[in-house]
Image (cartoon, rainbow, N blue to C red; front, side):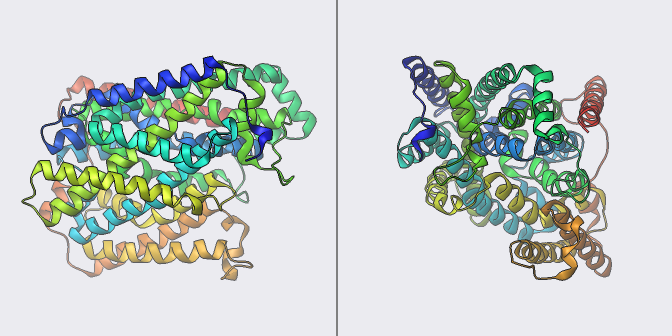
Length: 543
């Protein structure tokens, strides 16, 4: 690590960090041994209310790679990197309106358990394996590496000390407190990461001379396009690519079917709390564009030096340089606490989800007589194994120059088959398990082919050299389209699924769920409309 980036932390900075860590571990330990059965440990006793669900969904999503990747993307490409955040708002509307009521109706512990009801045990097992592989080899390892790298850059502390320290600290309060500890610490961490990030953005805007000063500086540098969120179809970050590849495929799967995120929805007290929690998270997802992406644009406007020790520009250092350049003593500790909050909230959710998947979809699935205490113990041991696995794979992640793009690309490609199967299962009753198998096989094959093609010099297929297929977003949608065709074709050529499966599991309807009155349903509809209009208006303003 280059000493150029190391900052001096005052006693006030250290005090803020220590207070944050003490409060976090205390809150986690508060829930230790409060659980009496597996439902208490894995789903917080199905007692969660909408403010906690919304804050936890937000904090689970925002991790260290967001701080690093969105600031880097803002510096390099501009606000368009924030499309991931605002497209998430539309996906959360789908979670609130379609998926959450279905999940709670069937009282499942995991998303694979729900998929089994529609497409059989084999699909459940495939999805479980997918989740565990992604948690270990992409999600936790990327979060740990990017967070540790920034902290190492800023403080000069030993990389391995930070890496193992964060992993063990987070594993402890997750292991002893279960989902309740995760979501309530998430709520605290969401507030801290928003507050700390707002400080950095505010100081950056002040340094740039306000919004008018920022736009003037960008004009002088010929970089006014950094303020646009809508790019043409030939761009790697095209707006149509975000709609097709992110909203309809990767984002839809991530927000509506990914166990790491949806687990707090499964722990909701009732459908009312789940719906409102998802809607609340949608409003919160508007914020990161202004507190995580905009600082990167500010760094570009201020022409901050992001060159590494080798003399080449390293956009992943944008966030480190912003903290070093803009923050006085005391506030550095607040921002570092925000970074720790983002990192630990995401990792704790991954650990908890992995433990639930192993306990419920592997152990309880194949050994139905397993006691609830044994399930919890197995989940805790699995949590430790996932922690160690994620840490040991971080050297592989360090080889990628653009961590954010790496995570988005892998997620976009390999979520394709399950996103297609899940979405079609909701809206098309005729699809069956044979079609699901065909869709998964086709989706995995096409995703592997197109991802390999994009990383091969000269490519594998000339037809994929079309400029509109430069982006992994549009390519992942192409994979989804092929997977969809396989799903429909095979389903139509094989027997219809049982009537109970068609009407009782994946059915779409706008009606009251558990714990909802007619007034609650109307109120949810109003807030969903407000969120949709707000995000669409923002896209128009920053087009």
